[in-house]
Image 1 (cartoon, rainbow, N blue to C red):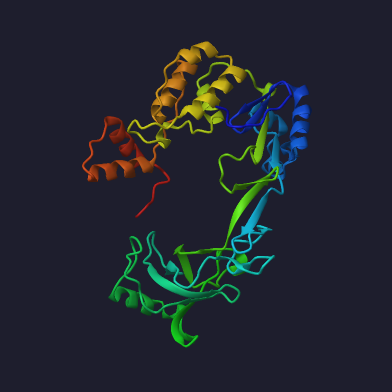
Image 2 (cartoon, one colour):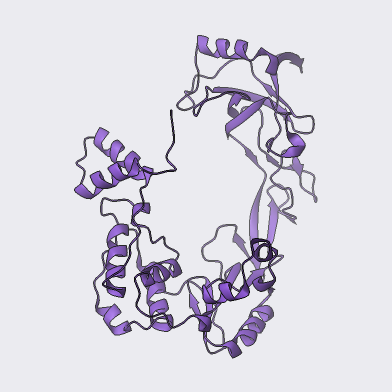
Amino acid sequence: MADVNLQLKTLGAVWVGWDLYIDRSEAVEPALNELRAIGYTVESLREDEHRHEEGTTVEQMEKGGWSLWYCRLTDIRRGKCSTCQAYISEQGIRSQGHTCENCGAITYLEIQDGSLVRFNFVGEEGYFPSELQMKAYYWDADQSDLYLYPDFPEQRGGWGVLHGDKTQEYLAKHQDKWERVERDGNTYLKVRYVKSSWTKDHEGVSTIDVRDISNHYWGHKIVRLWEGKEYSEWDTKFPVPESISVLEAWHWAPLHPSPTLHEKIIHAAGMVSDQGYYYQDGRAAFYAVHWERMRVFVEHFTALDINEWDRARFRHDGPGAIADIARFCSPSAQVANRPNFGNSIVAHGKALEGNKLTDQELNAAADGLRDPHRPRFD
């Protein structure tokens, strides 16, 4: 089944997933004009500012198989007020205290009375700083003041959250970062909080780093409108892609067998070609949609025998599928299998649960300890 239910009349325009590959130069403008007629704006990535800043040449983009055109639908997303059901602008709709431009009802509260806020005070050192979880009363976002109930809820709130006497010790340690205040006839603990306090404009304002907030108020939803019909923000049945990358395949196709050809095929399916990225226990990672995308790519943009591809039997787990595809493409394939600390964590969890690990899982877990991006505690 095709990913995109959008058929173009231009010969030489082929869908692979949500990407449009064009296999001849004379087909580019007709295909782009068809997309414009549907409602897409078309941007030439040859003129992209980042390309100029990074020093990437147009030839590198063309020969490297980069997207050269970016098409997107504009003006299809709307907010929908839960109170009056009106379509409104989505601009700022998920900011604290935002109101509907039609009826004035509140569309969103990131923090409301009763929200649980998990945080640590700024300046805490260490990879896992101590944290508090407290119930919020009110957040005055304009003044950057967050009012918290002075007691501590019984919910654990996650690993690392302090309880009992330790909460008071932690408050005493950071007594310069909060104050007790009276508001609406009650006593609250007030801290300074600015969302996105890492930005230059807010630097030094917040006295807390928020880790998690639960119990938001939603007075709206985001919808997409197409041809008079409303679709939810994440509706997978939206009839056309919201954005399309267009590639000019004639610059590099057909691709001939090589030690890295499998990477091109796998990436075209939207998948990662590194074996270490995937679970190592044999569970499926490549599904029908991925095999369909790869088949289209192989048929149209490689010199491989599509009939041989159809007859081949590939495994569906991540490491197995990559190895089989690589072997199909070249007997001297170079398969990436980088250390991944995630495999060490998964293996450790399974061992604690008493599950037997395969040799592949054990080897990947040992390799994962060499992952340069793993957390450091020294």
